[in-house]
Image: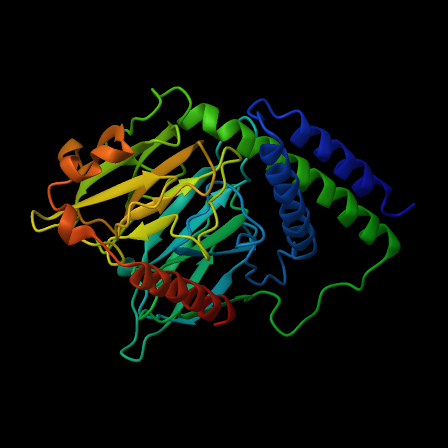
Length: 389
């Protein structure tokens, strides 16, 4: 049967989910099966979009295809490439906080992070007055001209990240890719053997995707003391203009974590919570993430986030949504300087009833139930707009 390899991979993937070591509750397992559904969708899309001579950008990570502690503020695009071709990337720069480009050799696997062969943001390219740009990626040339980037040995994927800081006002740009060497042509027609290969590849992508991001927390989080966060450090994976602070939490229903961090001069600064599956929590219908532009900044220039299951009536409440364990990460992007511990977070776990004493600007941080509902409504509207934009 043509689809049998894929069906076998789904059965094996279900075992990977069911046997995950972090599962403690039925809800953990239910969320794992939901994660599996999104991973199946994403793996099918990636396998069918794998066309290096006639590539196009796909969005393989989104609200229903989550992976790798996906950033709620980021639109992720990727295209498959090969080092011996030349590719033309055209688009229009929107008004979002950051747009970055990265060339990878290989993909993430359960044993390693792929090398980043090139990584830069749009400050490194020439953009016309009307916001349009054209980049070229390809083999080394004697006189490549501006906006030309050499594809190193093993180049296999171009990743583009567009990052929002203010969901309500920032405007998404556009982006396209075309292989200059094959423009005007067409890929070979589908065959039965070709379809069989794609189904087999889909199964491999699915299993690798699940196993990889079950391993990630062991590498970067779980060796840290619980309820702490690291000082800012370059984000693994080669994004040269991004730093992050990572940690994992475990809190009782009467406990809250206060994360205090200076408001950065970086164009993008954001915090998010993640589940034990290393996925973002529901960021559409709940405030499980905040950027510096969305957060309320205290008069002393610091932002105080409150991670809590119960509603504290505060603007910077990050909702746990029933997750007593999980991940917390802060990212800074489009940096023009290195960060150090003075830029990073301070973490304190207190009782819920102690918040009024532990937050120096408690009264200024309060919101009414109507104001909170308006915040959630704005999130729902903004995500819907950018996902269709």
